[in-house]
Amino acid sequence: MTSNAELLEIAATIARRAAAFAWQRRRDGVEIAASKSSLSDIVTRADRETEQLIRDALAASRPRDGFLGEESGGGSSQSGLTWVVDPIDGTVNYYYGIPAWAVSVAVVEGDSDPATWRTLAGAVVNPVTGEAFTASAGGGARLNGERLQVTTGVELPLALVGTGFGYDAEVRRRQAAFVGELIGEVRDIRRIGAASLDLCSVAAGRLDAYFERGLNPWDHAAGALIAEEAGARVAGLDGGPADRRLLVAAAPDLFEQLHPRVERFYADWE
Image (cartoon, rainbow, N blue to C red; front, side):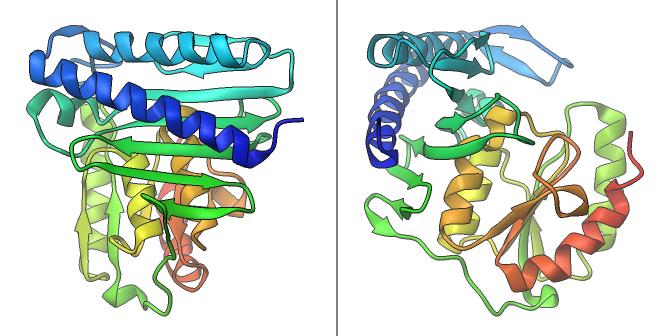
């Protein structure tokens, strides 16, 4: 049986290799391949090439495991383990040359559904900054090998809070209206544009908290584990597992202050 530490080594090795590939493609020049849910929801050729690199590497080293990727969909698991991959999280940042994008690779036990899976290991690699965030279940979270710990003892009025917005224009307007209310209740708001890095920023103490609605499984599979292993509480509506309806991440004391405030806004959304 493969240990969580061994799975993490595979995730981190492949994520680093894929990140280096994507970074080289960025230097070569970005080509938009398609748009998805809206004109602002873009896919670059590098997204597809990077995911294929990851999928091929995992097929070679873990042929019985399943796969769930943003660009190429899923593949069934014979082992009970599934790899959940975002080849370039923060594609718009990547396209514009903003150094806030990453390759996210996680391995989960169970169905490829955040409501039921258990994440065993994950890696989030930003090649522009040279940062590799890693975690394994029960093994703690690290940044380039150094142990991470969330910031505790922060009251909501002094909290630096990260969030994100949907691709649909009307959804963004509603979310922005809520942020307009919340910004007067916290230290400030940050909108970085890559969920995996937002979660890693909570783990590293660069953000005190993060919340977002509309995330896909690959957006948070690795980052949520890294935040949790650094001491954060990560949950969704009613304190259940995070899913597309809501994800909130913060140290437990701050989570108790922020989560009800965010949940009241998002609870009635369809």
